[in-house]
Image (cartoon, rainbow, N blue to C red; front, side, top):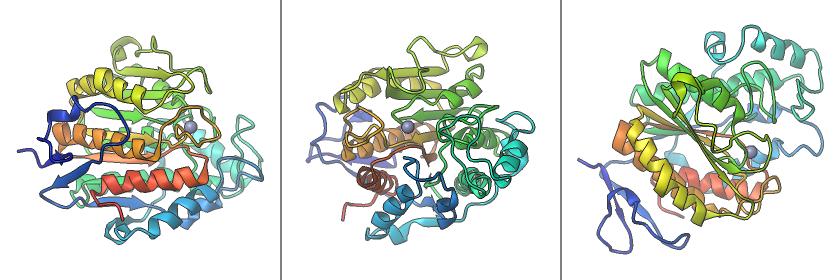
Length: 351
Ligand SMILES: [Zn+2]
């Protein structure tokens, strides 16, 4: 039986939302016959990754989001979850041997940046990054033990640009990739779907899994834009052919085009994949207010996309879903969007 349904202005609930039309203004009320237990990872330790003056990926991002979250009446209902240090065995599933050690030595040794000038680090950056990765693993454990239905890791540094052997784009460890392998090897899941709605293409995640048919990587991103990968023609390699799906968006596009992509391509292919868990690389820099992107999503767009992914997870895998923070650089838009994302994940009404 479907555990939930959409009540939309009193209309008959519709199957899978394919015939939802237009954009932006409909009010969605998702009602379930059981409360959602949403695991939430945040720790002030994540503020200790100091990227220096003027860097967009700064600790104020998390401070702003956390402050707005704590003002919500439903904040207390979240399952507060402690991040742990990710074990090397899981980091090594995704990154080259010695990569973790190289990052540790560079950070603790006082290097100012790693591999590329945009990956600024401080002496505590390794310790923060390894807990960011571990925070996602803790949510995975909560979901697999059924303590939680879904979860959101509000961590930094982000991860989706990190390649197997080098740091890139503000990212040290590829948090979501580590979690995907952990879910497969530790918890025995077979098929993992990663949807990446950050405005930048997740080159690291795509490259790590592009020959692997068991991890379906889907990205919506601005193109042309940093990092330059993510063409529609990039669909996976060898046995992984078809398990990469890129939906490049032109500057100025917004929710209408995103809805079309979900309706026409993403949802049908994601359903056909039948994932055992849904992961979201949740960057919020496709928001119209974001200084690092030129896509015109609104705060409510993130609620809608969250709902679509929950719907997929409900249909395919008992609602199992983990979302991990990536980018988002306008403090107010980030705070508002994260709050909307978490509100929908936990199925709470707006305050
Ligand atoms: Zn981004």
